[in-house]
Length: 71
Image: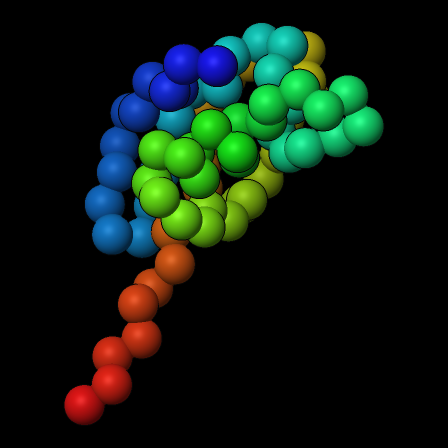
């Protein structure tokens, strides 16, 4: 899967367009999920704020982890 179109990104959020027929999260089909593609894009964890069915395309919001500050 190509990297999904990023609409907005900051230190906390990642907003992308989910293509149709791509699972939001990994499932028994073993097809690459949107979450997996975004983990590769960001180089780390992305949290799912909401889900869309595989056949549904649209705008999705993912959470990026907050780095803890140790003084």
